[in-house]
Length: 136
Image (cartoon, rainbow, N blue to C red; front, side, top):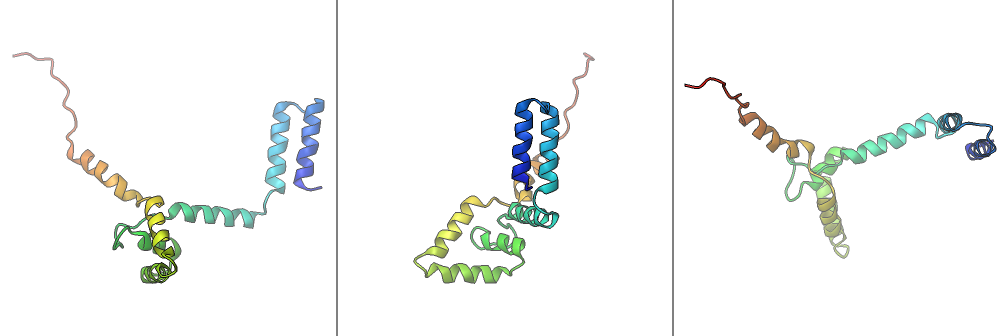
């Protein structure tokens, strides 16, 4: 019996009143956990998701928007290779230019770049001085 059939059977038992809401929720979570994707497949999916979350535009390695530098950090392919790829694909009806512009728009800057001005202002601002109750 695969997981879809087991979930269907659990739903029928819940509708018949044989399982309470809490029992149904716990059993459903157990079926999904036990019969869901294999641990290796789960790890591969999580690794892919984390790689996509790590894709940012570089501030250190940039000529225009930092797209090639960010792709280099995320994939391990040298920056010059990404730049050549974008230049070569630009000759395919402008596809490389379009891809670069879309990545420039939709890929965020590195996190430290966004937090640096806030940290600089916070470090430069002295702590507030409490008002004194003494009068001269």
